[in-house]
Image (cartoon, rainbow, N blue to C red; front, side):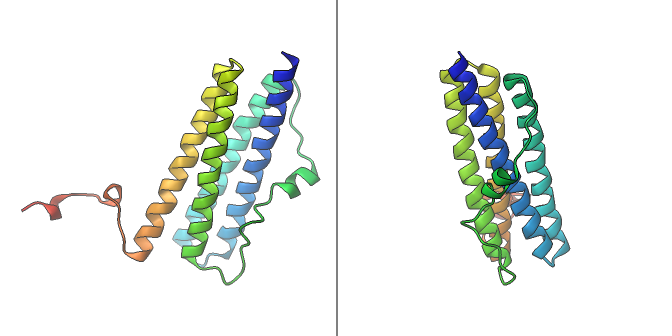
Length: 166
Protein backbone atom coordinates (compact mmCIF):
# COMPACT_ATOMS: atom_id res chain seq x y z
CA UNK A 1 0.00 0.00 0.00
CA UNK A 2 2.90 2.38 0.67
CA UNK A 3 3.92 1.93 -2.97
CA UNK A 4 0.51 3.20 -4.15
CA UNK A 5 0.84 6.17 -1.82
CA UNK A 6 4.21 7.00 -3.35
CA UNK A 7 2.77 6.54 -6.87
CA UNK A 8 -0.07 8.91 -6.04
CA UNK A 9 2.31 11.39 -4.48
CA UNK A 10 4.30 11.41 -7.71
CA UNK A 11 1.17 11.47 -9.88
CA UNK A 12 -0.37 14.34 -7.93
CA UNK A 13 2.90 16.27 -7.81
CA UNK A 14 3.29 15.89 -11.56
CA UNK A 15 -0.30 16.95 -12.14
CA UNK A 16 0.06 20.01 -9.91
CA UNK A 17 3.18 21.08 -11.76
CA UNK A 18 1.38 20.61 -15.10
CA UNK A 19 -1.40 22.88 -13.88
CA UNK A 20 1.10 25.50 -12.72
CA UNK A 21 2.75 25.35 -16.14
CA UNK A 22 -0.60 25.66 -17.94
CA UNK A 23 -1.69 28.54 -15.69
CA UNK A 24 1.53 30.44 -16.36
CA UNK A 25 1.35 29.63 -20.09
CA UNK A 26 -2.16 31.07 -20.44
CA UNK A 27 -1.20 34.06 -18.34
CA UNK A 28 1.73 34.78 -20.69
CA UNK A 29 -0.53 34.50 -23.73
CA UNK A 30 -3.13 36.79 -22.13
CA UNK A 31 -0.51 39.46 -21.52
CA UNK A 32 0.46 39.45 -25.22
CA UNK A 33 -3.06 39.60 -26.67
CA UNK A 34 -4.23 43.08 -27.56
CA UNK A 35 -7.85 42.10 -28.20
CA UNK A 36 -9.68 42.56 -24.85
CA UNK A 37 -12.12 39.70 -25.48
CA UNK A 38 -9.30 37.31 -26.35
CA UNK A 39 -7.30 38.44 -23.34
CA UNK A 40 -10.26 37.74 -21.05
CA UNK A 41 -10.66 34.22 -22.46
CA UNK A 42 -7.02 33.37 -21.85
CA UNK A 43 -7.15 34.92 -18.37
CA UNK A 44 -10.14 32.68 -17.62
CA UNK A 45 -8.24 29.63 -18.86
CA UNK A 46 -5.38 30.62 -16.56
CA UNK A 47 -7.82 30.92 -13.64
CA UNK A 48 -9.33 27.51 -14.51
CA UNK A 49 -5.90 25.91 -14.39
CA UNK A 50 -5.29 27.53 -10.99
CA UNK A 51 -8.58 25.98 -9.83
CA UNK A 52 -7.34 22.59 -11.02
CA UNK A 53 -4.15 23.15 -9.06
CA UNK A 54 -6.17 23.92 -5.93
CA UNK A 55 -8.21 20.70 -6.32
CA UNK A 56 -5.09 18.64 -6.80
CA UNK A 57 -3.34 20.30 -3.85
CA UNK A 58 -6.32 19.43 -1.67
CA UNK A 59 -6.11 15.80 -2.79
CA UNK A 60 -2.37 15.82 -2.20
CA UNK A 61 -2.95 16.88 1.41
CA UNK A 62 -5.66 14.23 1.88
CA UNK A 63 -3.78 11.32 0.30
CA UNK A 64 -0.18 12.13 1.17
CA UNK A 65 -0.78 13.80 4.52
CA UNK A 66 1.27 16.90 3.85
CA UNK A 67 0.81 20.20 2.08
CA UNK A 68 2.19 20.40 -1.45
CA UNK A 69 4.91 23.02 -1.62
CA UNK A 70 6.15 23.58 -5.15
CA UNK A 71 9.85 23.94 -5.67
CA UNK A 72 11.36 26.60 -7.89
CA UNK A 73 12.96 23.82 -9.92
CA UNK A 74 9.60 22.04 -10.31
CA UNK A 75 7.90 25.23 -11.41
CA UNK A 76 10.64 25.93 -13.92
CA UNK A 77 10.32 22.37 -15.20
CA UNK A 78 6.56 22.79 -15.62
CA UNK A 79 6.91 25.53 -18.22
CA UNK A 80 5.41 24.64 -21.57
CA UNK A 81 8.64 24.88 -23.52
CA UNK A 82 7.54 23.17 -26.71
CA UNK A 83 5.28 26.13 -27.38
CA UNK A 84 7.25 29.35 -27.23
CA UNK A 85 5.10 32.46 -27.05
CA UNK A 86 6.83 35.18 -28.98
CA UNK A 87 5.71 38.74 -29.43
CA UNK A 88 4.83 37.97 -33.04
CA UNK A 89 2.58 35.00 -32.30
CA UNK A 90 -0.85 35.52 -33.81
CA UNK A 91 -4.24 34.61 -32.42
CA UNK A 92 -4.55 31.46 -34.54
CA UNK A 93 -1.12 30.18 -33.50
CA UNK A 94 -1.88 30.90 -29.83
CA UNK A 95 -5.16 28.99 -30.13
CA UNK A 96 -3.44 26.06 -31.86
CA UNK A 97 -0.76 25.92 -29.18
CA UNK A 98 -3.33 26.09 -26.38
CA UNK A 99 -5.59 23.45 -27.97
CA UNK A 100 -2.67 21.06 -28.33
CA UNK A 101 -1.70 21.63 -24.69
CA UNK A 102 -5.29 20.91 -23.60
CA UNK A 103 -5.40 17.70 -25.65
CA UNK A 104 -2.20 16.57 -23.93
CA UNK A 105 -3.64 17.44 -20.51
CA UNK A 106 -6.78 15.42 -21.26
CA UNK A 107 -4.64 12.43 -22.27
CA UNK A 108 -2.53 12.78 -19.10
CA UNK A 109 -5.56 12.88 -16.77
CA UNK A 110 -7.24 9.97 -18.54
CA UNK A 111 -4.09 7.91 -17.97
CA UNK A 112 -3.95 8.96 -14.32
CA UNK A 113 -7.60 7.96 -13.90
CA UNK A 114 -6.73 4.50 -15.23
CA UNK A 115 -3.86 4.23 -12.72
CA UNK A 116 -6.11 5.30 -9.86
CA UNK A 117 -8.73 2.73 -10.91
CA UNK A 118 -6.10 -0.01 -11.00
CA UNK A 119 -5.08 0.95 -7.46
CA UNK A 120 -8.72 0.83 -6.34
CA UNK A 121 -8.99 4.54 -5.53
CA UNK A 122 -12.38 5.52 -6.97
CA UNK A 123 -12.32 9.05 -5.54
CA UNK A 124 -9.00 9.87 -7.16
CA UNK A 125 -10.08 8.19 -10.39
CA UNK A 126 -13.17 10.40 -10.45
CA UNK A 127 -11.09 13.52 -9.76
CA UNK A 128 -8.80 12.72 -12.68
CA UNK A 129 -11.79 11.99 -14.93
CA UNK A 130 -13.34 15.31 -13.91
CA UNK A 131 -10.12 17.12 -14.75
CA UNK A 132 -9.86 15.25 -18.07
CA UNK A 133 -13.39 16.40 -18.93
CA UNK A 134 -12.56 20.00 -18.01
CA UNK A 135 -9.46 19.91 -20.19
CA UNK A 136 -11.55 18.46 -23.04
CA UNK A 137 -13.97 21.35 -22.53
CA UNK A 138 -11.06 23.80 -22.83
CA UNK A 139 -9.97 22.04 -26.02
CA UNK A 140 -13.49 22.32 -27.46
CA UNK A 141 -13.68 26.01 -26.51
CA UNK A 142 -10.32 26.78 -28.11
CA UNK A 143 -11.19 24.84 -31.26
CA UNK A 144 -14.52 26.63 -31.59
CA UNK A 145 -12.80 29.99 -31.06
CA UNK A 146 -10.24 29.15 -33.73
CA UNK A 147 -12.96 28.13 -36.15
CA UNK A 148 -14.87 31.35 -35.54
CA UNK A 149 -11.72 33.35 -36.37
CA UNK A 150 -11.17 31.56 -39.68
CA UNK A 151 -14.84 31.58 -40.61
CA UNK A 152 -15.32 27.86 -40.13
CA UNK A 153 -17.90 26.38 -37.87
CA UNK A 154 -18.94 23.26 -36.09
CA UNK A 155 -22.51 22.31 -35.47
CA UNK A 156 -22.03 23.08 -31.77
CA UNK A 157 -20.92 26.63 -32.59
CA UNK A 158 -24.29 27.52 -34.04
CA UNK A 159 -27.04 29.15 -31.99
CA UNK A 160 -29.79 28.01 -34.29
CA UNK A 161 -30.44 25.62 -37.14
CA UNK A 162 -33.16 27.80 -38.65
CA UNK A 163 -31.01 28.78 -41.66
CA UNK A 164 -30.92 25.10 -42.66
CA UNK A 165 -34.68 24.76 -42.69
CA UNK A 166 -36.86 25.65 -45.67
